[in-house]
Image (cartoon, rainbow, N blue to C red; front, top):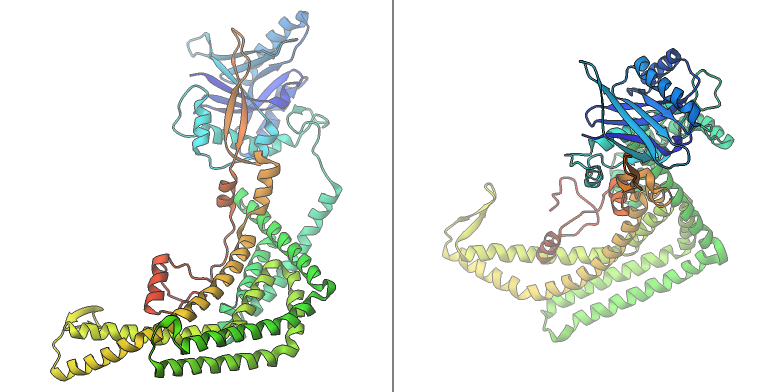
Length: 583
């Protein structure tokens, strides 16, 4: 089995020294993390690596020696000295890497000591990797099929990608080793991806210092707001009903939960929680920015006044169209002959409701501009809050259509269930309420006669009721579709992981789905050289992995369940009920 040595490209120019890293015996591989420069004291190197092991919880040790190109007269003495280091650090196998002067091919040796004496050299596969990218990346998931294919390109099929996962974990958990650079005054000097010094920013450091007290203050204020929202004053009807049904209240509650997650003083336990916080922060920032832009656009050129002036004529036009529709239904719609008495009763009943709705709109007309002004001001809380308020306003402005739909659906549903019950009577059946099933039953002559009369009456009145129900159901579905599109847009802003998508766009190596290996130029007698490159996650996988959970106050019925409800006349609510079963 070939020995795989993962070597960081940032150490290819390092001076002579020791290879420091982790030996993984299960996969017969070694992960080089840094190079310790000459001169050094072996005891101090061992003491430093012990401190790193305690801090990083990674078995870091000396893997072998590293030799950069040197003149020929110094080469023999240097090789002898590097071989002697293997007895001091007692690493088995002892890896020796040597970069030859004027050549891009390296000499690699891995020597194992047998208990009976003698040495044996292993075949080596040298894998170059970018330590910075591997350090900052996250493998998703460790056992992905892409990772298996990448591991298989080393020349051997493996059952899982545990080798790659161990390699990525080794680099990511070795942060204490990378804190020491070559400019430190200590006895140990290292070369790694941060050996030129850790980059820092004064602004970033000031923000870190100020973020802790700011988060504590915001967390205290949010806890007070949360207690007020959970107080008993809001649990009584109708406040509890309004708080649970209005889209604006649901969105404010959802954003309050997001702010509590952001302002928590605890450190994120893992990478997934850290990404969740970042996605929430970017989502809120984008939401508020879009809301402020919308508010700025509405307040420019008196657009709110123009919208308020156009709202009343638009409401009158809708009412006029509904009146014309009812007049058409009260006549001979599409050449259908309706029951005239029931047709006139239903038509006048709905015309009276339209009159009430017009009076209600004209009564509110002096306050419409002020209401729209405050609604536009609420956009500073975010675009989603403004859209939720718009959805609630649409629900209030179309309340008469909802009433028409409820009246028509109730009448239609009563007749459908009445006809189905009388149809069972003709067949000598009845519905057993206790056992929830249809049982046989014997009826006398009077019951059959009354049932026949009622069945005939309901059957001949059904077309008139069904036509009104059909028309107002279509109007109601139109309103629900508009509200559904608004809710879909709110869900997109709430749930899309914008930070993860931007990270995938700008720094794709941060979100890794696996790796691929490119075979470099070879030379006879030299080890196989591979270049490891990171395969980024696809955009679809990024969205599925880091998508934020959102509130679901809207029912999610299947098409079959929706068609069944429409056929039997069951009401379609724009919210969920407690205990409601979803197909």
